Length: 122
Image: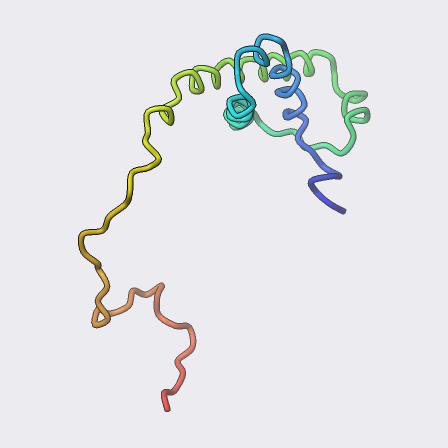
C-alpha cells in the first residue's frame, strides 16, 4: 500500500474544484493558488477515503452540499490572507550576523542533552 496513492483527502478534491474556477485561475498565480489550497485545507476537517465513487454513493446529498459550501467558504477566508500577503514586504537578501557566539564548553549540559549511555573514557 502507498498511502499517497491509495488514500486521499476528499476535501482536497472539493477545494481543487473551487480553485479551478475562472474566478481564481485568472486572478492568481500558481504559487498563490497553492497557498490558497493550503490555507483552505487547514480550515477543513479532512475526510480520508480510498475511492470517490464508493464514498459518494454512500454520502447523503445534503452532506455533499455542506462539504462543498464549507470548501467555498474556506477558500474565501484563505483569499484574504493571500491578498494581504506579508511575504511581499520582506527582503530575502538580508544577511544574518551573529555578534557573539554563545558556545561555552564548561556549561553543564541540560537534562535532554546528557548522553543516555555513560561510556567509560580510556
